[in-house]
Length: 103
Image 1 (cartoon, rainbow, N blue to C red):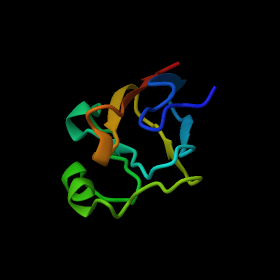
Image 2: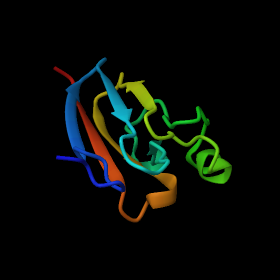
Image 3: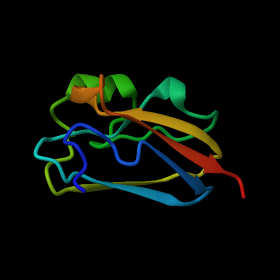
Image 4: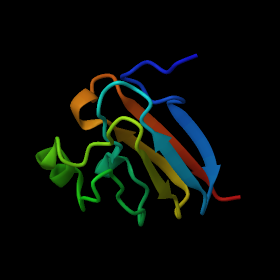
């Protein structure tokens, strides 16, 4: 089954500390993977496609930083906790969460 063009699938994923999550854009549109800075655990690294340092910088740079059709993006999660993220141009419908457990 194909993922809808404006959705992360799955919307929530659970991993262990030090594991990596990868996203692939298999839709017909460009997207971003952008962390909500206020949705990061203390001491966690900010992450976004386009390698911006802050959520605001990623928002301001859009459409630069897009994950184009067929491209992938990966991030390694080093701190336990919940990480909320979104797609800049489709924030009203594209949100997700990575839960990182200290196993």
